[in-house]
Picture 1 (cartoon, each protein chain N blue to C red):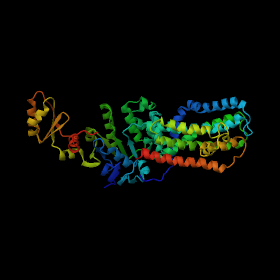
Picture 2: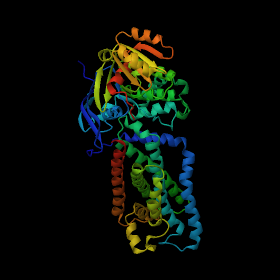
Picture 3: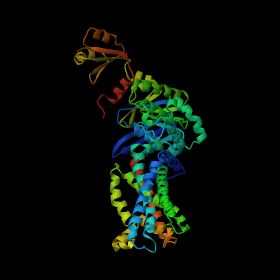
Picture 4: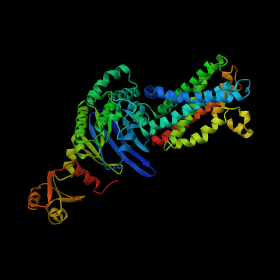
Length: 258
Length: 305
């Protein structure tokens, strides 16, 4: 098949609205699942473990952990939505097939799904940020810059999740991604402890993880400082987003439009 | 002559070296109800996907409602409705929400949809079920909703892929009646089906496809008259084979066997019927030739998988 230039359009909003309408019916249990889990980890580890730890980089452990949790809950929320939920719509319910009979193209669907997953991730990340602020763990209004960061982080992980979805033969396949990519990233991106605790080779490898760059931006912003090398971090997140979304589209085309 | 609503020339599509559509030509004039018939694997569904721009042809040209496909598939689909073979109604929504959400994909404004949805629910006889969830609907109701959904953008051209497969007779008759009323409104219909009685009843014109090629194209009655003797006697029961050897072959112009049934074709079947009346253990059916006879003659009698 000839490579066709993607022609995404604003019609992706119809796909986003479809998913929002479903979500509105299940908003309460869905939010509980998405928000309670990271919050419990943050509070439990932050106060429990934090009581035994010295300050890290001039902040209490719970403040250190709060910035990491904002990013990791964003990652988890975007990943679940763009894999399990998108896969249901694409493969099980055949909702994508029905949509492709209308003027909405596959590129609109992929974009709509990605923006939707990023929107849900935005809710998760923002909720953690809000709780952190209420607990007095946010130092200054600089933290407001975390909001666009949360959205872009969600978009990057949504793109990666959609790549997996387009490749996946069944739900079981996603376990590989969670075990081989998400969990290592969670532990080696500076969410729970500083990267400097890792061996040098792993520190270098961690520079390839999108989550590392999200945390590297979120932590200073929430603690009242301007991050170093902002351009690099933003570039890595933007590159993950565009490359993964384009790959997801090509793979979805190969799967659905052959 | 008005511009055809669908024009296909020299269409070809292969999968892994296997030519599924092998040089197909089709032309649907506005307002026609056109049946695309063929055994399993003849290339019908692939043809529909090619026409909708859901897959790219290897060669050939497609124009749908004046738009070249696949290049302007998005523009063309704005005025096309599709009833797919597999049920893909949105299980997360009620009947009404299915129509609302689907209408949005066409960019239809809320007010226009709110005006149209009650008509569509009436048309599909689902007004009383507007707030039911999809899981609570019967097979016939789901198919009617799929039809209503395909009409949400008031399409000029409708694609229906096996619209009555799996439905009970009552549900089929209701779908047929609705399809005829759509044809009377002047919409162009392209349907695929395995049911020859359905095609004969509904279609102004049919094309029979086999191995990716069109092997017949015309009005059902004219095609039957052209290819098939007007009368048929079907003979079945114990001893049908022996009867065919002794009398059937000699008394009919053509004598064929499908499964356990012997088909005798003739211009005058009265002598055959008189002969059969003497044989108590044989059962028979004397009827005019139909599209199924034509289909079996042209596509062969062996099983297709």
